[in-house]
Amino acid sequence: MKFNYRYLIIIFALLFLSCELGFAGSFPYHVVWRDYEEGVKFARETKKPLMIAFFSERCRYCKLMDKVTFNDLEVAKALNEKFVSVKVDIGQHGDLARLYMVSALPTIWFLTSEGEGIGRIFGYHPPRAFLPVLEYIGDGYYKKMVFEDFMRTRGKGKR
Image 1 (cartoon, rainbow, N blue to C red):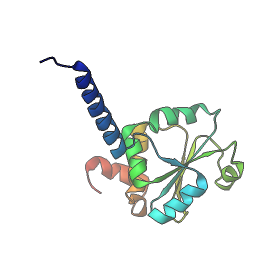
Image 2 (image 1 turned 30 degrees about the vertical axis):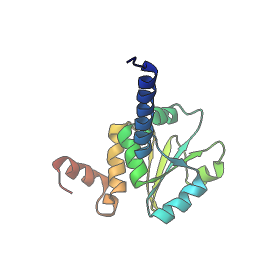
Image 3 (image 1 turned 90 degrees about the horizontal axis):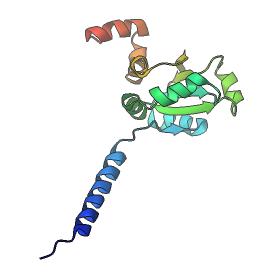
Image 4 (image 1 turned 90 degrees about the vertical axis):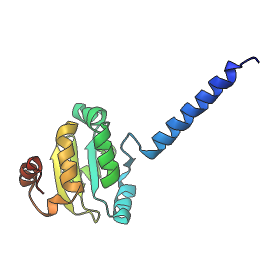
């Protein structure tokens, strides 16, 4: 009996593709970005806090946030599970930049699902520094304590 390797290759290729598509479909490895109007509406519907990242195509640190921080697996997972993420290009939406008093880039605003300001941060933050902020806001600790107390108790395992 003659064995046909072509069938074996096709079977392996199909198995590989089905695993890849199934795994990628179960968790997006990138942040799911929405435009401003859609994000505000979706935050209200889902009762999730809103994270608005203001950027410019010419901003070096904005590009670094995109390349390093927002592409980090843990950051993307936290943002996709606990937040509605919005990206606003200040070159196209200067009105929103003025509304949110953006004076430095990148600026990241965190809002409640109803649009009330929780806080904002400026500049580049590597994943290790950004994750505690996401935990503090995403898990609602901002309602109970200031960030400095959260960071102190976080290291001790008390919250």
